[in-house]
Length: 103
Picture 1 (cartoon, rainbow, N blue to C red):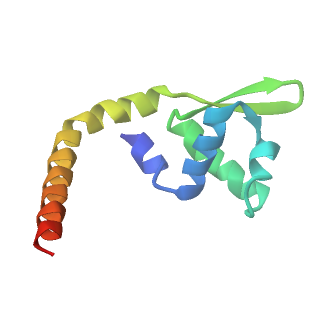
Picture 2: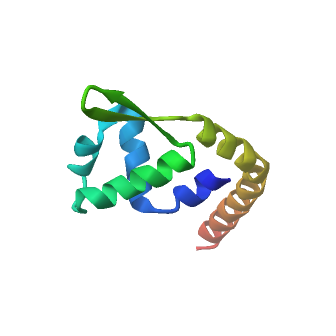
């Protein structure tokens, strides 16, 4: 569940989205944000500590990639709640349709 806490921050979510596309260096990631590079590095550290990001050295560069396993674990946990959401959304749709017919 630590992945959920790490993903609560919009900058970290955006980093995860970027890494889902391809492996990137810290500099490449930092160039996508207005924040200073040390700020992006702190976000990368949080993601790495929570197991969402892997890092490897390639010469002098550190390359970051997404580790999807924590996301799969989070998805498995959320599966239990999807039925609840779906029931609520179905009820909302029914009410919207009912009101449209009355208008």
